[in-house]
Length: 213
Ligand SMILES: [Zn+2]
Image (cartoon, rainbow, N blue to C red):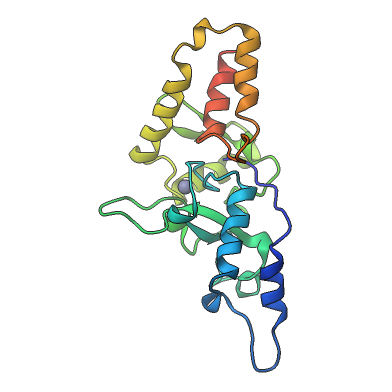
């Protein structure tokens, strides 16, 4: 899981909410384009076009806006930008297992969910070369990390396979690199590219690279 630094919400979204008056109250279900499209774009940009939970590549066409604290239980946060994230799986493909925001659905537990908005969320997860995501040994967060992995189904075969393939591609020829080149490779995964995109599964790959440095 990669930490997400929230940016300012799009002006069009603020304006749309400010139109509220006695006859008209904004609520999530009536949010439409162009405001919704601006919101999509803003969330994708601040996340570097990777899913807020699994870190796979996403764009407008294959992501949805996720309420970190579900709007059924936290209606006051339904339109709060700080509660909105971009998660993978806009529409489920045939037989595709649910994971991330779609799997999480209405679940949220402030003690048992590790949120990508937690500044140190990265420290609570570790990865294996065969693509697993596991809790680290940080005692006070171990249960939360374990529960989050389970509730969001982050360790299903599909995601494990995608992660292991991404890791394998990076490790190919890794041993031939100089120490400086290895460091450069690692740094490359800590920042977005010239298009504002983070590398797919950047946290998992960074973790594995660090085991070899
Ligand atoms: Zn995801």
